[in-house]
Length: 502
Image 1: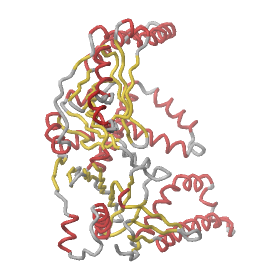
Image 2 (image 1 turned 180 degrees about the horizontal axis):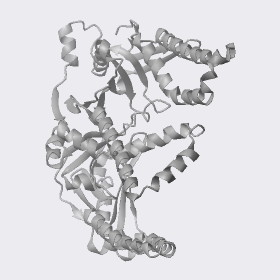
Image 3 (image 1 turned 30 degrees about the vertical axis):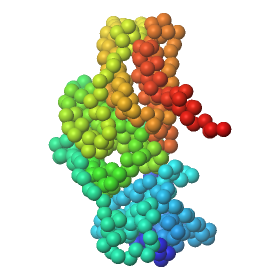
């Protein structure tokens, strides 16, 4: 394996500068606004330009630090490892064995595309000590990224280093590409319209406002709002509608940009997901890392026949939050099985469910009544007679409990366990027996009297675990699931065969 050293593209210095500047932009704006941009230029003294000079020095320092980081960064391949060296005053080296690399994730940002570059994130089985990507190559050519993948495949397949024949190399790297799914513009628009991004928009707006809490004239704004409210309920309602409409439009645009050209294909034993308009991302997910598959149907999408498919992935980086990856962000429910059959060929996609018993129905709404009663009483007392509307919570809670009761079910299909439940959205989870980390049966005093219990399973997801619960199962069904999960005990004949002969 060649130990020739490779450098990043010079544009990585600019990318580093922009990245750090983006992280500092809000504090920098606050400082500028609070200090009045360094004072008035009409004051006639040099002191009015001191603040401008400080800002300029900071920007130059950030740019120089990006150039230094680019100059001091290099990587090479040696002894079946990806080796990286970086640092100015303290030189650091990182050696990553190719056999530990789980995936190479690619990103093409607005600085990468004009030069035909990509950013490569190297993900290993357990992640780095900081739970971030094991290594990141900020900007390299696509040919260089392909070379890393070639070296990784060559090392994992134990191919000889002396193999120089380009045809043979291509055979090693050549992968069977199977296009599986591509989101249509219609589905993309439905996803954007129902993504719930309005809440994210207002959260971001709140964070932005908190950064300027010292300079925003809240008293004046409050007085203006009071005057505005006096115009009447119709004007206020219209204003709220316009604000929500703008927030919805912004969330739709953001979702369209993020999920534009969403495509899935399978290459060997990896799922390749590409998406994005301004920043094109390519996520590589080995099938061996997938611990569970879940189909999520929120009430709105369930009415329209749509669902989301998520996979729980072991390992990965906390920074990327890729422990739960939407391999199908939005798809017609009738199209889910044909797509999943191409990805997970051993998955039983039409299980025969066993539902929870009728006698457990009261457990799904009885606890809700315990907190609704004092709340409804307080609301009625302080807001009578309009507080009487809080009594509607009781029939709503009852109907919601029945909804949850009808959804809860399980199925055992060979070496797979399928669990279905509902908190608000309907969730169906497929888990292989060997992927389940733990299983617990839990029964309260009242559950024991009705001969029901709850099953809780945990699978690995990211750096932690994902818990799936089906409550209030029949006791016999819960024990059946536990017996299925327990390892098979060897028979007497098998023990005798394993004993050595004297």
